[in-house]
Image (tube, rainbow, N blue to C red; front, side, top):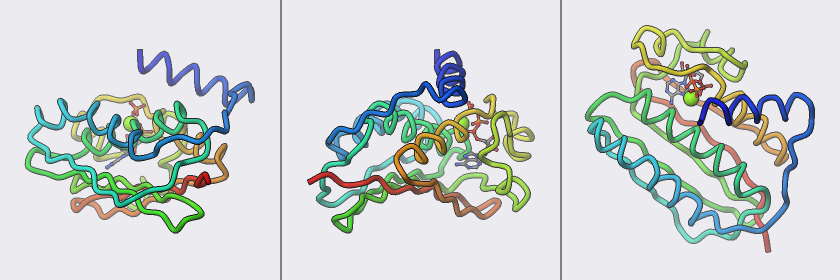
Length: 173
Ligand SMILES: Nc1ncnc2c1ncn2[C@@H]1O[C@H](COP(=O)(O)OP(=O)(O)OP(=O)(O)O)[C@@H](O)[C@H]1O
Ligand SMILES: [Mg+2]
């Protein structure tokens, strides 16, 4: 289902037929839902998964698409982190936007991988070496969703130490 969905989203992005809604939605509730969805897999792998956020304004954008983006980041963090590791989802606001970050203590990435991360079908060397399944579409789609919201996903990663992905979402009233 996820693969078919990802391919469809990719096609819609390429043909510019992806409609982005602009609505106010509860960011904390979105993050809670995303964390709850990933919790069973994290628990099965023995990874600590937590949500850390202060009071947040509402977000402005397409709730379903932002949910897809956050799901992708959390699923990657859980996929590319070994047993005993930790994944933290965080959010903070300066009033104008909400910064959402997903931080893990996982495999991390090399400089080479970091350069090509957002290309469709790109898979990192550590992912291939560790035989973690995937097709390499999650981040390409996520970056397009961020761009459609006037934002961009940033990444910081140290091989063997961990990775943080973050983006900003416009805040509502
Ligand atoms: N949190 C992370 N830690 C380490 N490597 C990561 C992380 N997130 C992404 N990567 C690297 O970036 C590559 C691309 O990620 P992307 O989500 O686009 O594809 P994927 O996870 O391989 O497959 P899928 O299409 O199922 O998401 C991954 O193959 C992996 O090498
Ligand atoms: Mg992925």
